[in-house]
Image 1 (tube, rainbow, N blue to C red):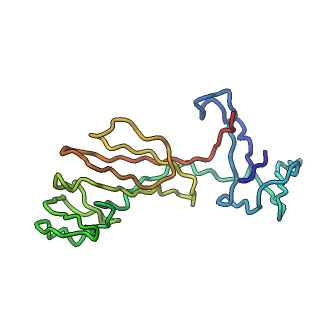
Image 2 (cartoon, rainbow, N blue to C red; image 1 turned 120 degrees about the vertical axis):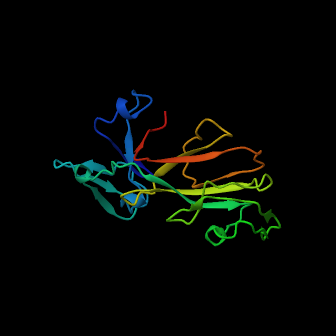
Image 3 (cartoon, one colour; image 1 turned 45 degrees about the horizontal axis):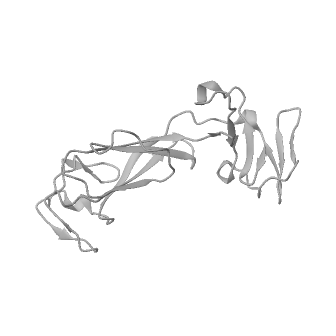
Length: 202
């Protein structure tokens, strides 16, 4: 099935075990990130030959999809926290590891002080077990899903336990902000998953 965003190819056998609605077949969308470089799909310009190769005619080129030779990325993305901001400002956490008794004013006028953390993470140099002053309560978390293959089709769900006990709806956004947090203990969690199969509109 051709769309303006690239072809949608029916996934053989991909029904009930992967869908909340088993009566709806599942499709994989092939977009620019998957190697489909055409501009949309021309009407009636899709053909599958005897070898199983699917030929797609687009506005500016002919594309062949060798569906059976694809290598699926079966390993779930690894979720990583990449930044923690206060009041929408980056904080030099690694420089503060030995200066937790300091306070400073951000570019937007907010004062940061009276904070503690146990250590700095290895890869992104972020504070672990962070404790903030009650009035340093506008926090932004940035995150990413790391995949074995370059796959921009990753969806995220997150929750701030202590504020919400349910996960967010799936999104492709990689940051979330929480403002006016009340004093308390919070645990931010994020999970990522590949989005390879798309359901058609019903």
